[in-house]
Length: 335
Ligand SMILES: [Fe+2]
Ligand SMILES: [Fe+2]
Image (cartoon, rainbow, N blue to C red; front, side, top):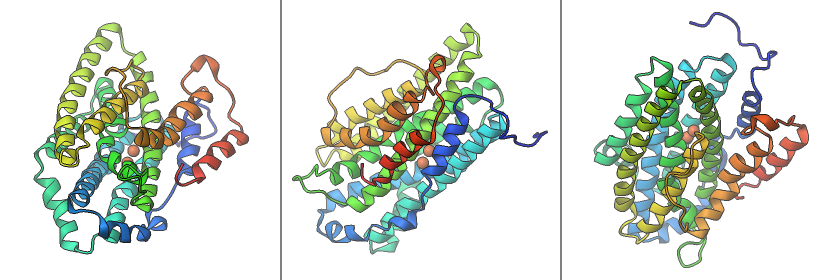
């Protein structure tokens, strides 16, 4: 029950307003980025590559649909502080934009509408691994009663946004970066993926910070129990991710590299939640790594950490010049 009006006059912490502003500055709409220039390249791509691309994007659409309708919406309902609810509400709206934007790519590239319908409805609905992943995550989102449940839902959200998306993001980033024969492919579509990646970096940071704060409020016994639950969830999801990656990328001979990239992002999710890396450091495909670090790492590590968002003892005031600097870089569509 909400008992008083949201009061933006009251400062509640050192990061919520930063995230509100940054989310707003990054705001975008899919129809401004119709990837028509990719049609020529798409038509020349071989069938296996087209299919892997379509499957990767259909899987991403499903995850964003869940995040829009269930994940971020449930978090917005259960987060207690009103300004933070506003940030989560804004992010939930962007999840709908993300989910829709893949369709903008599909309808631009694929002329057979019935294939798109089949992909997003039948293929997704009947895919055992996607369905298993979706059930695990949604169950956690839909049973929030206590603060411990809320923390676990935040963990699930950070896993989804900072980790589970990346098996899908790999292919568009790899193709646009010239991964195949050094030729940049589907670069317009990759611009949309970059915008989504940029948003997810901010979302994962924000929810991660809320999770860290909540975790600190629990006593040690609760913390160690919750940590066990989190690692069990990570293991369970990871098994699914590895099998899913094999299925989508096996034929292209990319599964090994995608798996390493997925584990790298699992570590980034753990960092967002305030924990140490879970997987050992390993070599990541340079093309995909460059694309990721220019956006996701820039946002989470360079921008927010420089602003003291992660270091409570070292809070610096955020000035207009800081925002100008970050947004100047963000304006470059393919950073
Ligand atoms: Fe999203
Ligand atoms: Fe998100």
